[in-house]
Image 1 (tube, rainbow, N blue to C red):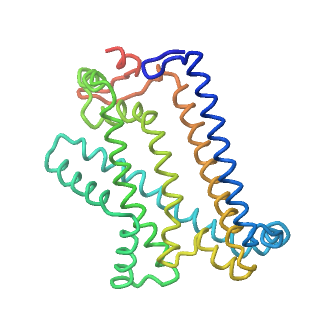
Image 2: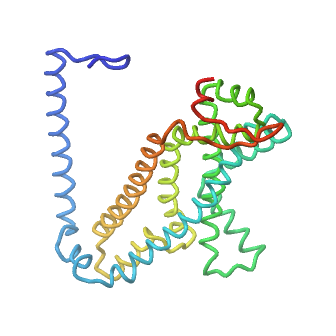
Image 3: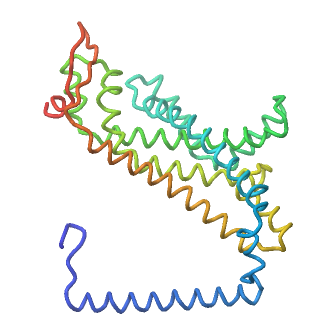
Length: 296
């Protein structure tokens, strides 16, 4: 089926595509054969390297599951703080008041330009020098602080872009109905922009989950990936097997997050467009229907 970006391939193009596919699969199979052969020479495919994850429950109860709990703890705390903070910063960047818009924009651009690992290291140093937080909890605080500062700035840009992507008539219709700027943003623009922003927001939430591993690399945060060192030290240097299992856990966790977000997005898109919302307008209460605003 032809479209603006894609033309239906003809017979010669179809044959070329088949040849390209066969060549790609052959190259991929050769690469996999080479990698597996190299791993086998290093005895990384031996059964004793992989069997602890099936036969020894201590690998899970002592290392993997506690590490997963720490990863989820840092990710959930970061998400719960970064989402509302990012939404507030994004709305601030859309303010009509320059004294609000400019400082908020400077904050967003500043923290968005700094690598998240550097933010974590600065936070750890600040907590160590100027607070009495125990060293047992300091890595968690530093990881959450770095993730919140960076991802809230990114989410602010996502919110701003989502609101600006809406037709200008949405805001004009709200003004014509007597709604104030804040009411327009809260009751009209943001609810519609959520479905536009959701894919980008989900991608950023996945990034938050993965970036918790940075705290384990340099700050001593005992998250999931950092357990690799303990497992390989106690179960015969099975580095490849451990990393594969940890990678599968990350894939499962992020796939679940993406699936839940996809279901939420479908429910939002299938919601009734004519849902009524009671909004107090200037001069008295008024009941405004979203389909009436859309048609204005």
